Image 1 (cartoon, rainbow, N blue to C red):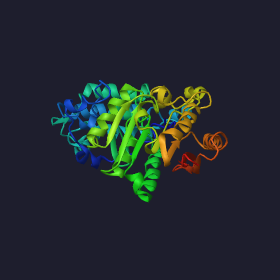
Image 2: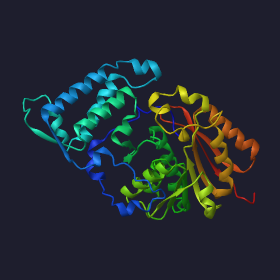
Image 3: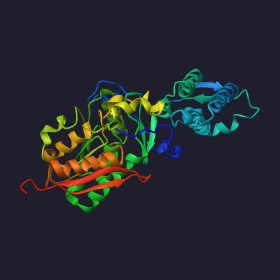
Image 4: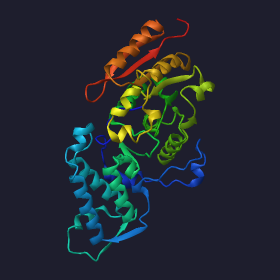
Amino acid sequence: MKLISSACSVVRIPSLYASLYRPICSASLSSSPSSLKPTTPLFLRPPRFSTSISDLHKWHHWAKNLASSVGASFVQLDNGPDSTSLRRELRWLLEDSLEDPSLIYQLGSQNYAMDVRLKAPLDELYVLWRQRIEERRPFQYIVGCEHWRDLVLSVQEGVLIPRPETELIVDLVKDVALASGESKEGLWADLGTGSGAIAIGIGRILGSKGKVIATDLSPVALAVATYNVLRYGLQDMIEVRKGSWFEPLKDVEGKLAGVVSNPPYIPSDDISGLQAEVGQHEPRLALDGGVSGMDDLLHLCNGVLSMLKPGGFFVFETNGEKQCKVLVDYMENNNPGKFFNVNIVSDFAGIQRFVTGFINNKSS
């Protein structure tokens, strides 16, 4: 569903932690379409463990040396993180783990007898950091969250990590919603929601009168998306449904004001060449778009014709310029006159990334 960079996409805003903490009871999670219980992000866990400043300093020294030993080898291998990026992640891991992050500055002090409170045992921190370096496990899976727009979203193995470029989908929807009261108060669908990032972003824009249905085939994604929706208090306006693409939406056929999706779009043969954090750890179900990478994009393109109401809006994320042009040509040649105002929109890096447009009146 996303692109290929994992380690370089993290944007941390630690000051948000306190304001975004919302406890979730098990009864609330029982309403999830999946029976799975998602893992609690490290920064939201209670500080049940303790260690001495001395032992924490030893771990930190070991972890820094392990990060430094990487040098630029990961960059040269598959455009992975360098030592500088890894040391920055190490600091974030420490911030998430400590009850009082300001104690980081005392790690080099002589107050070795002082105990500190941790949200994970020190033995676990050794394991986590070894996994980050030796197994190239994504940092977001290590700490259990990703910072995306102004959100801090739970993520874990089996759920794709939301990327910065995907944030533009929310901005594109915002432009349409602000221009049309009908769109802002209508029903939207986020297909292949993953962590629920796009659905939550759109839900916060639409306000109390709009609704979003978020669908996914993965039980893990459904559980995590539900967790994130509940944590942001949006359960009254975002409904999470299990199923493949339009399948769970048969009851709202022809009634949707908008459809958005960041589907799998990596060509199958390209998966093995992705950055290790992505190709070896993120769910293939969310990456593999078939031989050309276009299988799901073309399916979505066909489906919106019956799912959107006249004048309905759509946004699809693609792998880049080539896929954008193929998708636009497909719309024009296979369904002439059924789409209008079809555009290709570039991402933050200037890469043609999104295809947007509207559905014509069915009677035309």
